[in-house]
Length: 548
Image (cartoon, rainbow, N blue to C red; front, side, top):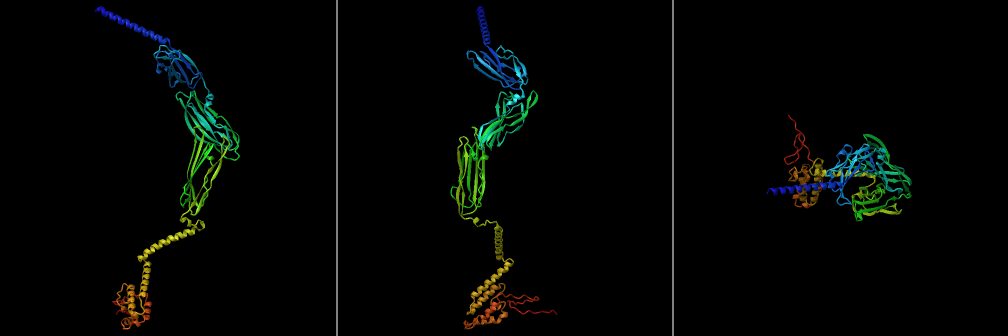
């Protein structure tokens, strides 16, 4: 049993030694097939980022974190590491590993780079040196500003787009900007925007820098060979802790402008759309007539479109309700302008004809020189119906008379309204007027009931009139009438005629004269406090009393 146990122990020991030897020989074989290379950019400038590429060809499995490059922080600013791996072309057992390390230094001259080591490899790279060239501000400033003219040939009055690009770099400060200039031209800034870009010339701490883009609209007013002077920028560059001032002018652009003797609108394409409302050709006073006009031009500015002036129509209220303008630079670098406006015409007078004629203008295509005609269509409407406006005078000479007439009518209307109310309520003088017209009515009723031949009918007519005429007095017979005493004989003759056997032979002339004479009879006022009337209203003579 002891011998068997020793045998197994010796067997395990032999297997372990064999396996260890195999591992050591395998690792030695892998390191023998490892190749390490270091490369850099051809020219390295101070203040400008550059790349150091470390290439390892081996059959040992490595990762992005296998490389050890922390020692570079002592001499450089380090950017974002980029790692790739691909199988070798000539040997499938090998793999090519590449590490691209962005670096930046403000120091110029010969700089030593210590060897790179790798986890998983016992082999390290060889030490290397790089030559950093000091870059002047003049060389660096060449790329700050750029100009671009999209069309070197144009026609007088044609829109030309001009582009200016200014790089905004971290170590460059632009303090002033002078816009471009040109003779016999109108230059207008269309838009200004800032975009982001990526460049090897930028700082590795900010791999994305910005560019300011300005788009200009230029229209030349005279033909000939023209020159566009580029914009100018001034500022300073931060280099090695100092600020170096600089001034740069954009590239000069030359353009040949052909004549346009007829001064036509120059455009690649013009479209006009007009819509009139309402569709019916008969309208009434106060009903709006609208015209919507939309003009769209390619490679045109809004200022080049024909003026849409409103016509002078004295019998219409004319105004512009809405205007919409837009200019847009398309992706194909075509400049499209759109103008939309809505004109409103409101008739103020009937029995008139609204007539707006067509408006035509010619535009010139710069590509083929072809002339085309665009039309802004007009319309005709008949204004009919009734309106008070037809009867209002338009001549300002009669304005004060019209105002006075309207004021008089208003005052008279208010006066009449309150007069009726006061008359019905017998207020003030209106009470006296009401009473007067009542007396006249009573008198007319009595005259209608009067009879020349019938004393009874005449007697009754007189009594009815007296009862209404003096409502505050009790009147039953003729002797109750206020003026009976002064005309007793006439009233007695009327009474005798009523009871006479032949009353038909009676004449009313005497009593008619008495009643007509006392039509507006008023009872006399009392004197010295003596009541001149009896119990039944009979009048007595005034008695003057003396105190004893």
